[in-house]
Image (cartoon, rainbow, N blue to C red):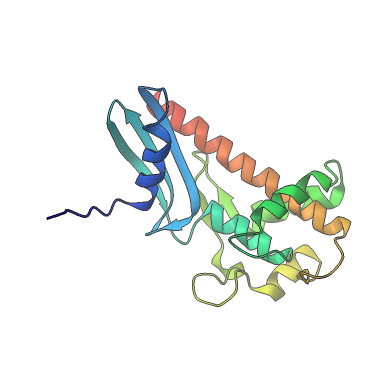
Length: 185
């Protein structure tokens, strides 16, 4: 007779990094689209134990936010995110369009809390109830550009938007790490 265990998605991620590491104690953050209902988990690993301190819940997800931009910029969700990440360095870091996009993301699409948790304005997103990641017309109006056809030329506006979401994602993850460090020491 064999027992089957069904561990939580994020706990599995945490275990797969903590247990093979050389550390006896660690703060552990796992972030992805969604696993069960959690979209990010904040854990404290000590010895052989991993304690989940708190989690972010669907539909509020850094991973789904990033995938929404992947979709809008014409890449395939759940496989093209690396292309979006690769697009970001081509954005104009001092450009007014890129700076405006960062502000649009932070004022219209999401609210970032001090602990790195976020609230996503669902009037712009379609992934929880529809067949696409975003409400395309709303995004086109917000960013002043059409959703990119996957076969179309890459333009500077696409690069600038890619850089904007990369910077916002980094801001969120750094806030998460700083907060978890405070909690775990």
